[in-house]
Amino acid sequence: MRPQAACVLLVLIGVTTAAIAQTKAPTPQPPRSAPTIFMTPFTAPTPTPQAPPTGAAPAPTPPNGLSPLLTQPGPLFPGPRRAGPTYPASPVPAPIDQQKTQTYRNDLLNQRFQLDRQGVSPDNERYREIQRQLNQPSSR
Image 1: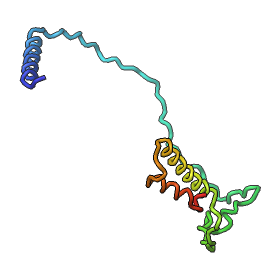
Image 2: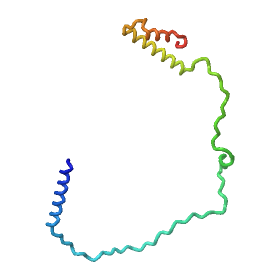
Image 3: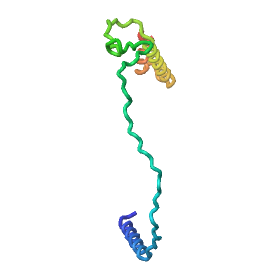
Image 4: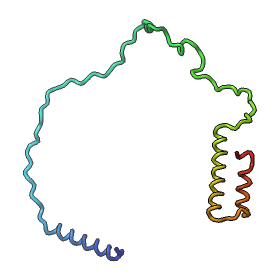
């Protein structure tokens, strides 16, 4: 909506409201009756809460004895472990490394298969690179 049209609309609404308010006569108010007082029975105020009494006697000991956490001083949790001696890596690859190696080899085989399906010659540079990586002893 354009700003000029909005201003005109607001002015018309204001004028109409003022005209309607002038034509209406005030509505008569009903006569007021005497205020009604409701009598409620008297209730005593509730007393304020007080602290429970404290006895001078010591607290009773549990039947199983005190918890070791209470009787033994020291930290609740053990401290961090000290670094142990380092050992050389094993020469045999771990199962995860074997999986990664096998996955890499399978990817190379799939790429070579795709090149074969596309009719790419074994003399192609990419084909020779894939074949060279497949022939490496570490990838078997």
